[in-house]
Image (tube, rainbow, N blue to C red; front, side, top):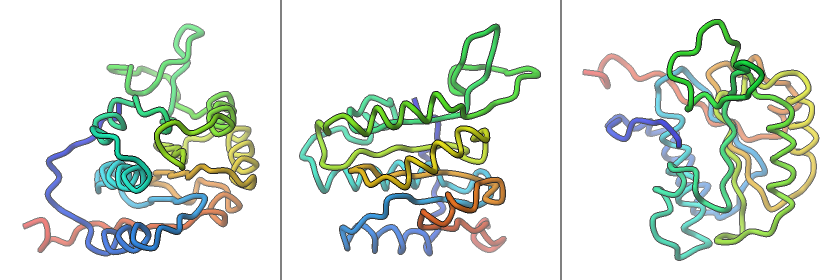
Length: 188
């Protein structure tokens, strides 16, 4: 399940214009990187963006609910994991991680290839959302780069608050969408 706040009433107008323009053109890049400070609405915007893409190709109802519940057949969520007692545990499944380093591992990225090789069920596009992409380990980063280079019917959306930790070659293959901090006036 994707953990995000639905009560965020502030909208990053610049990002909103970019997203609307992409949706209207119906020409999608292979990858997007949503970057900016923590807690600025990247995840919330990504879910809405994914929902709108799926709506263009499908008449299915409850799309947003399926995405949030990680239950849409053409959607894959990749999030950092912890290695606890020899088991990989997703971030959303851990209540209070202690002394464990969260990482996105190569096996998770390899699962993307398997996911993209399967036929789409409810949409023409498959979408992969990678939360905190800056936590990709080195081998996972290289595997993701190779996956991004191969043309597919997939769209990648990477979320990060630390763009500088992503490989330059990954950044160069994606469209950057910057989320800026809200001004004091907007916050008031």
